Amino acid sequence: MNETNIRLKKNFIDKIAGGYPLIEKNAVIDTDKLTHEGMVINLVDNNGKFVAKGYYGKQNKGNGWVLTYNERDRIDYDYFRNEVEKAINLRKEMYDDRETTAFRVFNGEGDNIGGLTIDYYDGYYLINWYSEGIYMFREHIIKALTEITEYKGIYQKKRFSDGGKYIDEDDFVTGERADFPIIIKENGINFAVYLNEGAMVGFFIDQRDVRNMIKEKYAKDKNVLNTFSYTGAFSVFAAKGGAKKTTSVDLANRSRKKTIEQFIINNINPDEQDIIVEDVFKYFKYAVKKRLLFDLVILDPPSFAKSKKHIFSASKDYTNLLKEAILITEKSGIIIASTNCSSFDMKRFKEFVDKAFHETNTEYNIVEEFYLPTDFKINTKYKESNYLKVLFIKKS
Ligand code: SAH
Image (cartoon, rainbow, N blue to C red; front, side, top):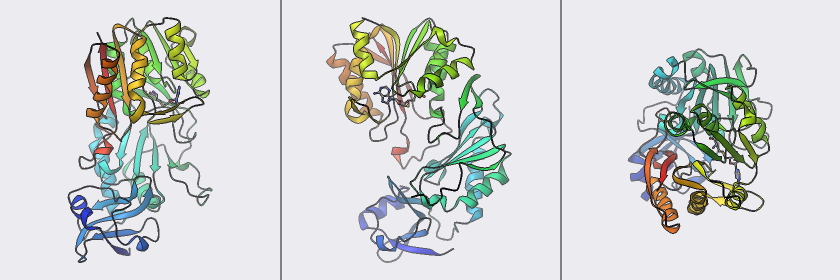
């Protein structure tokens, strides 16, 4: 395959040579030579000396990813097969676990190829392509997956706008078509997953450890409020852990039907749970007015969301969100604060927490702390990939 030399700007050379995998938009001199997505590029210094090899693919984050630091590596079928095989071998034990049948098999730059993730849902694989560039390697990657694994079917999502170019290419790739929903298990609890309904499949795998902790240790006999509840995953685990009652609040109409579905497939009577379709901020006002108090309040907002009345940005507004939650949490109750925002780290997140409690004159202590589970392998040189931060905070 042809490879093109692309000069790096001086102040990016050490960063890339030191292992930073993202080819930032402003990192290269020869932008005019980046002519087609999926081209293999050799990043070089001003004297033409090799620094790293990668591919060109536009993502909001940058212009592509480094794949290797070995100039002789060819980016061919064997290369992709080797990387996919390594990733699968690292997760061998997860395949054997009958109680948990959904996990991440390949985690982008954490598994050496940025822009690509592969998830496993009880025999079905879902590939996410985050740029047209990585999509250009689809034949190799799909072939590798089909040769290495035993699969029922493979689905894909193109997480880039293709201007209609690949419109005839369905979400279904190969194998047998699933009859949706697929019912997967997570620590013995059922979950309905749809691989054919747009970007979100109904279930965020990365909160597995948090859900389990809620069920095992924090839900029994508790009155639980789950905000930004989506399909109610946290509510289901709380109910299974013996919660007195759960209240799920989400703005999206679809959330009611989806949450009822999750309760039913776990033999929980949805009539005994509250499912409220409403703006969370409006619900907080209602709860304060009605003097409702909860033992356990879960906050899992998106990094950024716009509703009719509100723009919520996690990096700006998390402190205020917490302050609202503190008001409706019982004394000695727990607030679970979660964020998937990659623009701040755990240290900063704890500062938001501290500020919220300080400004409401409330004492607190942090009792649990979670990051991504191990199948979401992270690249230690790329801190942004460690996006998930979850704190269990006990109100005094
Ligand atoms: N906690 C969920 C995932 C949350 S996804 C889980 O564990 O599965 C984010 C959700 O926030 C989406 O379902 C979206 O509809 C909802 N949302 C965004 N802004 C909102 C608001 N202002 N009020 C209520 N829900 C909101």
